[in-house]
Image (cartoon, rainbow, N blue to C red; front, side, top):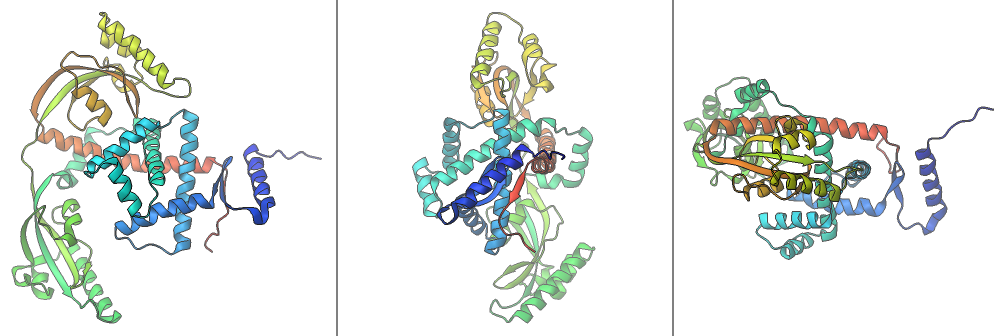
Length: 432
């Protein structure tokens, strides 16, 4: 008789299922999914739901039906668990000191103390410990994706040029916008049929405008707004004065773009971003720096990396050539061949921990080992300058936007591959 071999993960999952089933009525925390050799239980889903629902409500998003939301949240938990497992395999972790610093940064950005942040979160119905662990997971994901995805993303000069040709307006630091407006009025308390009719009329106008129709002509003919006979022109608004209904659009729409119909108590609004005023030329302090990076993994601990960099630092202070040591020892393959040279670095070009250490150095100073999401570094500042970086800043913003798009696509593919390679069994009811 032929022997059928059973995958160890499947066998382990089966045993877990049998144990859970044997518990019967005494089971207090039912298994919803098996992810490799681990389980996701009902209490985990409940905690995640308690985080997700206030986030949706805070953004003004309608909360989906409970069963649909549970399926979405469970899928997110599965992906989280896969990433935790992968991070553990690679030796990536987030210590409590790093987590506390991240929470303090969140509090500072909201002009709160850490204790005030805790009070505000718990007042919103979220346990602070759940928020804390969610923050830890975000940091872990950032480190994992930096190591597994971001390092492989390249952006060419041709891609930057094409992006700037098409989307330069989206990168301008806006100080003011000029808006045009068409209103299709309908009372908030009107029956469903007039509301639907007004919405369809607004959608038809959007279709005509995007096909090339003149905004001013359609506004004069169809708009119920006070500026209809002015072609719907609302004039210029500083960014702090933009009406709340269109505040988000005013920051993201491209020049000439037409919005989808926006609902308000007075009816449906169509917005055109007619023009943009940007900020003055950007003059910044740039730093010419170089570094040596030692990445941590299952073979190289934080302590190992610090020790190695400490030894290299002593050799440099003793007269050894920084560039030669970088070529021989740095794990940053992109800069190692250049002797660790990062070129001219502007504020925001590097991760915050690196920038803070670099900014604290005088020219020719050498840092102590500093930890970032990429690993451990020693940094040396060569020189500084003041530079009008308007054109360069636009190119850097374009590069960053392209990298983010590529990273989002690569992350989706990577997560799909993680999921495809894993043993996963979902026990929550699926839609028919």
